[in-house]
Each structure stands twice: as structure tokens, then as C-alpha cells.
Image (cartoon, rainbow, N blue to C red; front, top):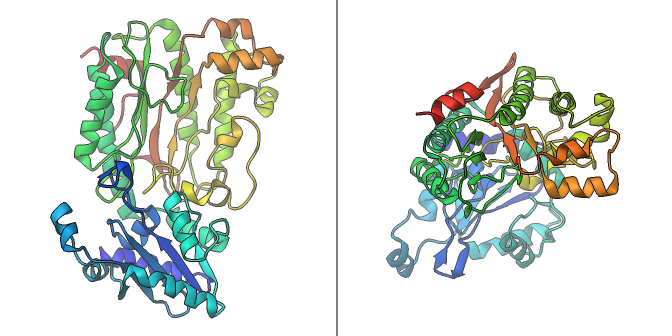
Length: 453
């Protein structure tokens, strides 16, 4: 494994960067007092370059000398009594192929020495308050993250190696078992919390959860993390859940299925439209095509279908161009995935997702995280959805927004429909794409076959 991390560091060192690069690791985060912490999750960039999965470390790269230094402190006797033994900082460094170590208290002097020598100090955008505090302690302004380092690291991480694809696929396989369990067990009278608990059990046994489970009858709420509702006959259930491996590579799948053994006709109609959009997007995946174009083509399929159902009207191309479809599809078609379920999200989407170009400010389209040409080695999700949000519908109707494209009276009959989404993970290949993991039930017939068991 040290060869993998050494190769990654060498690739970064080959970039036209000068000075020092600082990579801060994460700390334990207390829930309600210092010794009662949330599950620890290491910073993904530090993991990418070292694989070191413990709190209280930092990496510094010297681009002139090519030397990397791991900063950290060995456990004290009190630490060992409380949490058990861990390798020493030197042992961690040896495993990662890092030749130099120093105490964490020496980090400030190393950074100050670089500043005094007139050397540039590169760092990535901080996403935790602890990172801001550390940067302040080191005399660095947290709003001056290095764009050259962002671009260099993101271009390394965005193309997945065969090893990384295998790890992601392992996470996807565990994620699939989470979804099959939910599809099999859900029934009227059960709580969302019961399904969430079973799904979480499978994910945790496989290595961990890639993100908080979304398990809800309110599928129109895109990131619903409440689990107090009771499932009732006639409702749809949406599960968005993924596992991660021990190396922290993520899977991310979404499924929508009826609480009853079968879909109603109205549910089938909306689900099949969403599935048509999904399948068209999957067929379009290949190197050289801009993911934004696939997103817009998927949106057009949804708009055409909704027009056929009487929910939209007018010119479909113009409706999508103006963003009227976003009442029903207010999010992006998908996102990059890797060691982060939304890969490199903390770097800023405009850099890794748009290669420095500005994003759209239009409602719906502004939520598309990836707007660049696909390349071999990208791992992405495809997750179109159709959502009926009463609050958003009421607001748009009151404002008269897109009244030439939306039949608000017809939409009102779907106030209690909730939403549908399907999501799978794909790696871009030389000539197209490959679905990661074993097949997940997609069609109405496939989903109902699991529900009827």
C-alpha cells in the first residue's frame, strides 16, 4: 500500500508548484463533552496521500526538495489507557512511505520558517472550524486557499485507478445489500427508523456509512434525515443510502418503492418517466460528452413526459431553457464519487466540477455539481428524480412563475405524491461506461418482485 501513496505524492510533486503544501488532518469531534465523540472520519485528502487514519496529524510537502513530513504526537500512557495502543507516528510514516516525522508542536515553526523565507504556503479550503482555528494559529488566512493546489490535487483525484474503482465497487456491493434489505422488509405500520436501523447495521458491518441514511416517505425532501414517520398503505418509500469501505471509498444508491407490494397506476406513471430519464442518461455516458448536456437532456425527457400527463405545457425546449422543469427536478443529475460520496466537495465545485468556469445561477441548474466533459476514470452517480413539493409549488404559483409552462391546477392533485428517485454508480470507460456493483432492481416489475417476497 505504501507504493500507492508514494506514487500519488510523486505525481503531485511533479506539478508546477513551488513552496510548501499543508494538509491538515481531522480531530475527534465531541458530541456533548470532550470524551464522548462522534465517529472519527479522517480528512480525505490526507487519506489520499498517506492512508493515515488517526486524529491529530498533518502533512507538509516541500515542492523544491520533494520531501514530505508527517507531523503528530505519539500516544501518552493516559491515551493508551483510554483508547488502547496505536502505532507510533514513525510507524505510520513508514507504512505510508514518508521519510520524515516531527512533533505536532513543530508545525508552526515549519510554516513560519517557510513564510520568513518568502516561500508560498499552499493549502486547500478549510471545511471545519478546527481547520480555521489551526490555520489562524499558524498565521494563515483561511480565505486564501491555493487555487493551483486545488486544481492540481483535484486533477489527480478525479480519475480513479483500478484499485480505487475496485474499492468503490466493494462499497457499492454493500450498499446494494442495504437497499435490498429495505425493499424486502418495508410494510405498513413500520417506522422509518426501523428501516434506517437495519440499513445502517448492514453498512456499518461492511466498513461504515458513507453519509447519513435518507429513509423516508417524504421523498420530495431531497435530504430528509428524520425517521419518525409511520409507513402507510398507498405511500412511496425513498431510500438513499451508501456504505464505505475500510479505506473510506464510498457507494451511493437510491431506490424508490411502494409501501404496498405493488405500485399504484399513478405511481407507475411517474416512476416509469423517471426511469426513462435515468436510462437515457446512462446510455449517453462516455468520454468527451459534457455531463451538463446529459443533465439537460434528462430534464427534457422529464418535461416531455409531464407535458404528456398534463402537468406541463408549452414548448418543452423553452421550458427547460428557462428552468420551468426545476419545479419537479430541482437538483443535479449526479455527482463525482470516490473517497468522498460527493467527491472533493470541500475544494469547491467550480474548480473540480467546472474546471474554473462559473456555474449557472438558475434554480435547479445551479445545483448541478458536474458541468465538464467526462473522461475515462471518472466515477459518477446518475440520479434523476421527480418531486412534488407543495411549498415550492405554492410559492411559484403565487408568483406566477413559469405559468406558460406549468399547469398548476393539475399539479395540485399531486400534493401528497412525494417523490421518486433512482440512483446508481458508474465508471467512465474508454468507449462508454460500466455500472458498478451487481444489478439493483430498476423496473417496476423488478421492484415489485422484491416487494412481493
